[in-house]
Length: 280
View: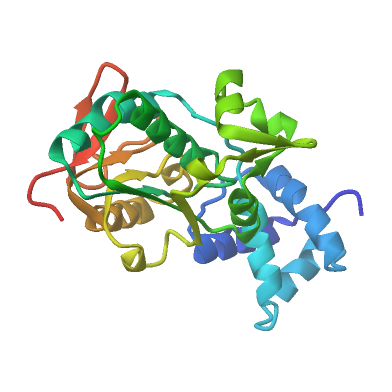
C-alpha cells in the first residue's frame, strides 16, 4: 500500500471520531495529513483501505487501534526554548517574584509537552537562575509534564535525544552544561530531569488529580480545539491554578475571547496571562 484513498464521507466520519476522542478538529482539506500519519499504522495492523479502518474503529475490542490513531494524529514537532520569550519572562519576572515571596513550593505544569523539550527547557532556566542567584529561590520546585501520547511521553521520560533534536533551539553551551553524550545520543543530566515528572493525560479529562499550579504552559494547543472546548479547557486550567498564577499560551492564542478569568500582562519580553484576583 503506497497511498490511502479517503472518500468524503469517510473523512467526515474520521473527523468526528478524532474530535470525540481528543477534541482535535481537522480542517476541511487535511486528507494528506491523515494519510501521511496513518498509512504506516494501517500497514502494521494489516488494514488495506481507509474504509476497512473506519469499520474496525467501530469495534469495541479495538481499543489499542484507537489509541494508536490518536497517538499518531496528536504527535507534533517541538523544539528547545521555543519562541524564547516565555523563558525570558520566567527568568526575569516570575522567578524573582516567587523568590521575594519566599514560597515553600513552586509548581509548574507543561501541558501537551510532546517529547519533553518544553519541561526540560523550563528546568534548565530554573537551574540557571539558582546558579546565578543562590539562596534566593528556596521553594521546592516541581514540573509536571503531560501529554495524550504514550509514545512521546516514553521518549520524554527517557530524556535522550538524537543529533537532529539536540540542535533545534538550544545553544552548544547549554548542550555541554545540561547533557551527557552517550554514543549517538545526548541524555539530559539528572539535576534537570529530577524536577520533571511525566503523566499521560487528555486535556478533555479532569485536571483535579494534578493538584494546583503557580505557572501553566499550554502553548500552541488551543488552536486545535473548537471555541466551546477552548472555553472549557481554559476554565478548568484556571480552576487548577493558585491565586494570581501565570498562564503561557502560544503567540497566536489568547484567553480573552473565551473566558474573563485572566488578565494580560505585557512585559519587555512578551505577553503572559495572569489569573485575576478572586479566581481560584
